[in-house]
Length: 132
Image (cartoon, rainbow, N blue to C red; front, side, top):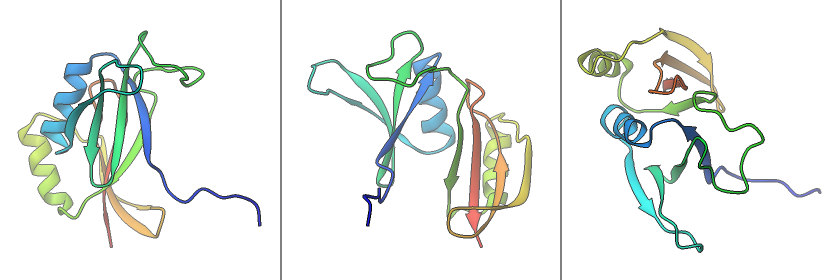
């Protein structure tokens, strides 16, 4: 049997404005922004949630190795939540965040999901989903 990966540890988002990105993911999505220091001694930022994290690279200041074409707003991310989408809709409206689409039925990694679609400050498409 050939080698196979088993899970996602982290991914990297290239962002235009680190502070705006941290504020959005903390205040809107409930993630925790964490500073960390890799072996090179620099200070980097990540967004932590559950057992996952999203490392943040500021456009033009990316860390090597990096994506071939790192660009703010180029990602499309789906997050699962136990919070009902009606509560998410009320939260997003109260925070002035526009929902582009939804709730709509989609297919997630393990089956059907119900999703809504806002965007982060860079225009990254965010999908917030409930399993059913």
